Amino acid sequence: MNKLAWLLCILSMSSFAYQHEHSSPTDNWAEDSLDRYQTKEALIPISIVNSGDGIPYYIEVNNRQVTDIFILNDGESVNIEVPVTMEDHHGGQHFNVCSVSSVGMSGARVCSNVELFNLYPSELSK
Image (cartoon, rainbow, N blue to C red; front, side, top):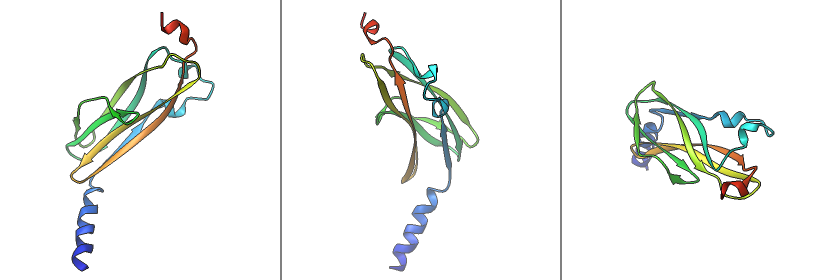
């Protein structure tokens, strides 16, 4: 039992060896903000700030990987405009945009839930 406790302690330490922060201006868009009204092809801006050396990342939209894996070193940050495609219908459309990082046997997924509105869907199909 004592060996199991030590093993769990060692494995959990690797997950505290780095910090992964993700933010998006969309988190602060007001409900009635015109920034929420998009065309068929939209970009959702996110920022990633990394603390930890040589951390691999990728971006997901609605649980689907949309970028290749890229590496960030300690203190590096990146601003990304994540492309999404609006469906051809009225009403809000939800996009779960996540930055995913991994180190050894641990990882982190930090997400922003963004709702975009398509005001003129019939014009998009033309």
